[in-house]
Structures are given as structure tokens and as C-alpha cells.
Length: 587
Image (cartoon, rainbow, N blue to C red; front, side):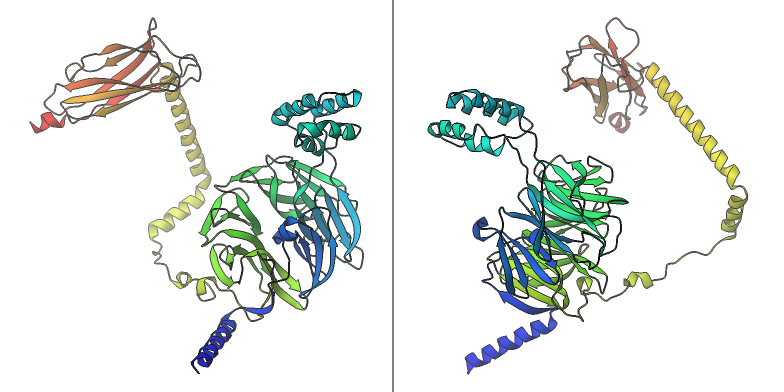
């Protein structure tokens, strides 16, 4: 009876959790054998297309699912990098096509049948590598010489080696001669591969408008493809290899492209720019990049989400309870909601709008890929795959409303509070009328005063340079910097001069330091001394003592002059405001 009552209570708890949840559990298959990530999931004609990596990264294939069942499965020649759906043409019926990036090719499917294959253009071979293989064609050479030849170009050349040479370098010495004889007649080919892919609207912002494919490649380039002829419309260069892409705008009008790269930076490119316009430097490697309206949301390996503008300004940061494995966009068209989904290593899927947490989904295993959209008959379906190869399908309830932090829907309470605005006084009204009537004259007077202020500042700066009254040297031959520090309460003060040679290569020799002061107020043991050799970049503290002679607490200025031997004009100077002697004042 006790066991029966405990099972009944567990069932009631599960039913209450299901009732309070915003999601309906549609399907869960822990043995679905789907191994992929978010970039390789796409929904096409109410079917799910999966670029499957295969168990252990072996046997990659393209799977088509209808509901929870696999309808079709076809092998792929290389591991998939990304999958995307797009419209190629405006002709009726407007059926979207599927683009699957795998290795150096993009496979285009129409009606889930092969339609076109686009291959990346070959790269020019390494000149030194080409010369070595040409020597091998002319006659027999020692394998050791051929083995030692590619190594310098491998280390120093800007262009990497071809696959043929890389395979050769992995061989043992006994196998090299046979490999050279077998492949020396082959031409050297250097082929890059696709690392990421997304879509960009061609000339209209409509949802059913024609889109271009944007490819990121291993040789640090971005390519924009024509949707009909599959020719390269634009080519852009990056400082590093792109791994995540986000695009907004239209190719023919104006667009912004954000590329997260392997060097931990995010580069922003605009139309007609061959190189990045802005750079966002991250403190850790990115694990995901999603655009929500005008905000770029970046997940990093420091278990945190960051929000940036398109110009690189950080807006907010949210710390996650576990490592982020995958990210994707949740877009609910019926309510105009856009949010970020983040799958965590602790088995949670968190949904954020900006930095506000909207919902948390608990899964039996860590989620490695996410996809949200219309699947089957349901408009709002969440599809997840797990680390163990499982498949989870959840449906968002039609009555579900995401609320930030469980607060009430609507404007914040502070918006209803009335501000204590003071009443307009007679003086305020008279001043407003005067500004309206004499606005032009007031602006001219302000501009005149501003120009006079700039002129006086420029004259004072010029006078300081001519008389060397600045603590920075204005000459290129003696680039010096001086500042002074006074320590003590009095009557004896410690005066420390910090003199630095700001040159990068040339030392400075033959300098003198002179103090000008009122001898009735102060006494210095060394009012004039030589400066040792100044090595570039080092800070030299020069110390001396100043004794105050006045018992009335009077202070004055001590002028410090840095001179060169044989010249009367000082190189630079500093005015030290001496404090009052507290010791004499107390006595």
C-alpha cells in the first residue's frame, strides 16, 4: 500500500509539472541515433532535415524526418558543416530549396532531390611546393631531400601545403620514394573547405523573398553566392577562420554581416567592404552567435552570454550555471517574440530575452542541437538532439506566454509614478521668451567666445612650447618626460623628480637639472647637478631634499629646469607647488 501511494504521488507530481509547463512533450527517443549540432538542423516543407555526423564522426549522412520517423537517409562524402533553407527563384510554386555544406561543396536539393552541386574554387599552390614536385617529375631525387624540402615552406610560407604534400610528410622514410613515384605526375591542388553557412535576402526583406548563400571558408574568406546561377557575387577577407555567421539586411540594398572567428573575435562587415569595419574582442572563445533584433548575443566558453551592438559596444552579460553547448533563435511570430535558446551541459535549455530569463526546460541528457519553427501541423515546435544521440520534440502551448522573471505583464510600476516637477516660474518664462527672440544673437556671441577661448589656448600652448614650460619635451632629438613628487610634512621635504627617456632606441646623455627658488623661503643642498645616462623606456627617480626656512607657513613655487650642456634654453620644465610647512606652523 505504501508503494502504491508513493507511485500515485509521483504521478500526481508529474501531472502538476506538466500542467504548469509551457511545453507539451510530443516525442522522446533516446535511441534515435542522431548526432549533429544546431547549424545542421533545418525545417523544410514541414519535414526535419538533419546533417548527421554519424557515431564518432564516422559515416556522415543526410537524414529526412517526418514526425519522429526517419523517411530517407543518404550518405555524404564529408562531414556536414551547415544546413539552410532558402528560396532560389520567384517562379510559382515557391518551394524552398535545401543547401547543405559538406567539405568543399554545397549540395542544393529541390523537393529533397539533388539539384546542383557548387564547389569552392581551387586555391593557388605554394610556389616552393610546386617547384619541389616539378623537380620530382624531372628525375629521381633522394626521398630525404624531398622530405626536407617542404618543411621550410610549411613553417614560413603564407599559403599552406596541399593534401598531397601533407600526406607525404606523414610517411616513413622507407615509404616516401614509392609515394613520390606514384603521385609526381599529378598536378598540385589546394582546396579549402566550408566552415559555416547562412542566408542573406537578395533585394527584399519579405519572408518568402529570394535569398543568397553566405559561406565561410577555411582560408579566412566569406563568399556570397547568387541564388540562381551560383556564381560568387562578393568576396570578403577576415583575419581568422569564421565559425559562426549572422546576417541582416539585403544584399542589393544594405547589409551587415557578423562573423565569429577562431581567434576569439567577432568582425562586423558592411556592404562594399572587403575587410571588417568593426571588431569585438571577446575574453574567451565563442560557442554561439545569434542576432535578436539589433543585438548580437554571443555565448562564450566562460559559461556566459554577452549582448553587443553592431558597433561592438557591450550591453549586458549573463552568467550561466553550466557550460554552453549550443545556441539558437526562438521566434514566435504570433506574439512577435524573439529570444535566445541556450543548451547547457547540466541538461537545461534556458530561454532569454536580452538578459531576462523567460523559461527553463529540463532534459534527460545534455542538448547538443536546437531548432524551433513550424513542424508538421504545429507552428511552434522545439526539436532537440542530445549528446547520446536522442531526439526530443516539444510543442509550445498555444496559451503559453513568456514573462520576464515571473513579473506582471505590462509597463514597470515605476512608469506609473508621478514625478515632482516644479512649476514654471516667471523668471523661467521670461528667459524662454528672451531666448526665442534673441536666439541668433546669443548663438553668435557664444561662437565668438568659443573661438576666442580656442585662440587663447593655442597661444598659451605655443608660448609654453617656445619657452619649454611643458613637462614633455617638444623636440624629437631629446624625447623626455618629467614629473615631480613632494613628500613630507616639513620643515624638510623630499622632492623626487621622475625623468624618463621616451625614445625607443636612442639613449640621452649630457643633461643637467637646475632648481630656481626663493632663497629666503627654501634651501636646497644641490640646486644644480648632472643627470646620468638615460636608457630608453626606464624611469629614473632623482631625489633631493628641500628645507623650508620660513616659520610663517608661507609656501612658494620651485621651478625645475632640464638643460643640455652648452645650451641656455631649457629642454623642459616643471613648476612644483610646495606645500606649507606643518612642522614650523605647529611650533
